[in-house]
Length: 65
Image (cartoon, rainbow, N blue to C red; front, side, top):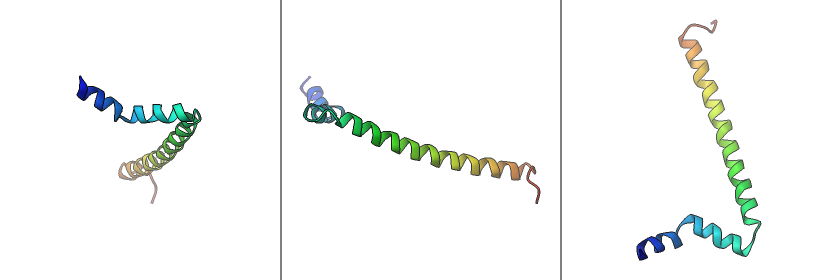
């Protein structure tokens, strides 16, 4: 039980909770940062998907040389 409480108190969720208690805008800043990271990751994955799709089209002979 004590170990579980120790894990809870040292968790990332508890850290965010403590920060929010001090400054309610922490959630907005955290959400904005996460949104930006996700948008960058989406862009990277879309570019990778297009590259792989192009490679697949070339291998299938669908792209004229």
